[in-house]
Image (cartoon, rainbow, N blue to C red; front, top):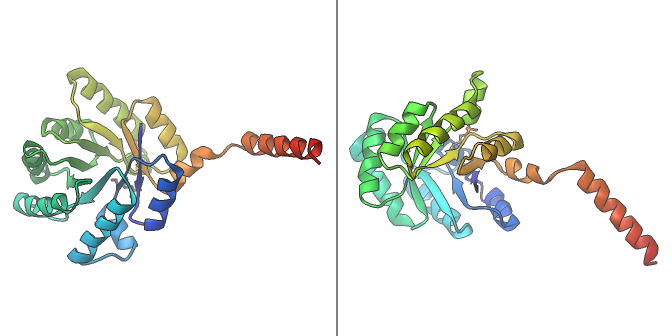
Length: 218
Ligand code: E4P
């Protein structure tokens, strides 16, 4: 399972990278705005900084909603760095743009996916990644994990190569349950990765080991 961090915060990205388990980064316009990054030039420069920090895929989202705009933006993003994956919204023009980019060998991430039918369309259009938003489904009392299960079944039935990128992950249980269901990738905040480290028995066990070592090595 690949671990992506879902942020545009360079400190969080560097911390996850330093842990040695990071496979990539996803961003979106809201996450860029949260870091105060605005204006086309600054946004491109920020993506460059992210690519310099990590070795894996970096999803960069277009803001156009028409095919021509998405193609223009996506081509500029893909030309910026080989690690860039063009992130496209799950709308009709997004599907068309996904097919256009996949035919050209440019990698894509189809985002804002909330149903199995949308995931099937993304795979048919040759998406590299599909991003079902678990947390946002849970927010409206719908089982986000069930969507991961449905997509896994459909993709396995037909051998689709599109990778399931479980997005809108909010906590460590989301990560563990997505791993159980065979999600290829998860993307979440730093806390969803570092939270996996924690167990009180690890802490108390380590404290006891060190206490015993210190007693017998005085
Ligand atoms: C995915 O690519 C999105 O950036 C993200 O996971 C959305 O998460 P949120 O629902 O916590 O905003």
